[in-house]
Length: 402
Ligand code: HEM
Image 1 (cartoon, rainbow, N blue to C red):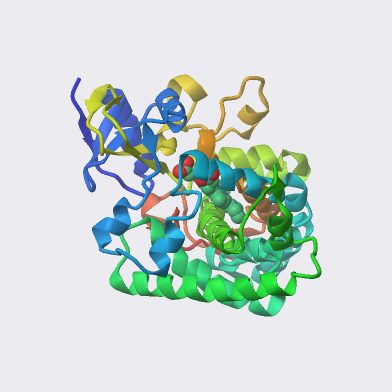
Image 2: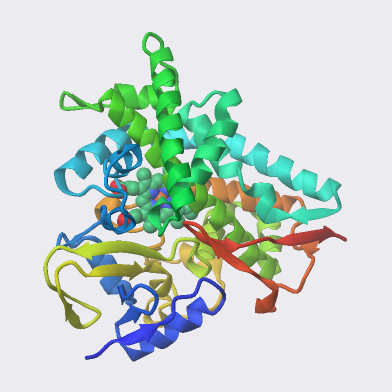
């Protein structure tokens, strides 16, 4: 079996490129990076559990010549880049603090922020939905972490500066990310000091107290973890808000359904993520030779597990190119792979889903798709410009009030 080449794109043509590549074989080579792309649902899921594949680790940093310094130290200590016992230990302790209950406590905040943003758009007679919701996820994350209100704007800047760290950074981006790690560490250090004698309900307090069989996170590990959550949750969720709102504006019937029955929000969120994901691949490195996409690949190969391809696979989803939220309520609905799977499964999936549900429900209640309508014809692909830092998203979504 030989490989086809896939021209990786982030725009509307991505789904067609995946479909054609899947038809040609279970794997492909990414034209831009030379990485092996696993396209098949079962294989993507299986490989997330396969210990012969490690996270991408420090490969990109080595390629960019970031040999030492605070950014490298931080990056090499986060859950994304660790595997095995070190990863398992951090994950266990963080999960004890980052519970579904702590997420639920911030639903009201996410809802009220989303409502405010939509009301502002309606009052102004229109606006850009992407810009309106851009900082909503990080505000929710900061409140959950316990960042004081007057420091949230600094953390928004840290989030922006850290979001490019998983890609090929420019020298300016490296400098900005490095400064963000230093600033964030100093700020979190002070927040830890202020909780030394008096713990609160926030995540920093919980991370300090999280204990398992006598083991605890060190002071430095708590600092690293806060940066880990910001880089994991900011751009990913903000980008998915853009993708989800675009999808709903292209399927306004679902906005009517959501207005009539807000209890469908969770299924609608999952279907928008399946249909138009912000995160499309999970990167891995082969620790030893293994068959991926039907071909034996040498150790050291970079492998992209394409959850975006898996989410549109015909024999898994039935009618994959139809937008149908009801599929997630059916018995034996397939598992959505956009949050990963296996030991690195997204720690913030519940928070992301909650935030997205509040955004789309508030948008529907404010009249999205009914009185708040797209300023351009969104069914025309050339009217949507796509951009990407960590997650892909529409650059803007202009709406007007009619
Ligand atoms: C729609 C939004 C989101 C998407 C699509 C997403 C996607 C993912 C994916 C695919 C992974 C697995 C990476 C891998 O296997 O290498 C992951 C891991 C992770 N995510 Fe998310 N994520 C989202 C939101 C969040 C949020 C809100 C947070 C926290 C505030 C978060 C924190 C993390 C962390 C800490 C990990 C690493 C877990 C580990 O390595 O054990 N994510 N995410």
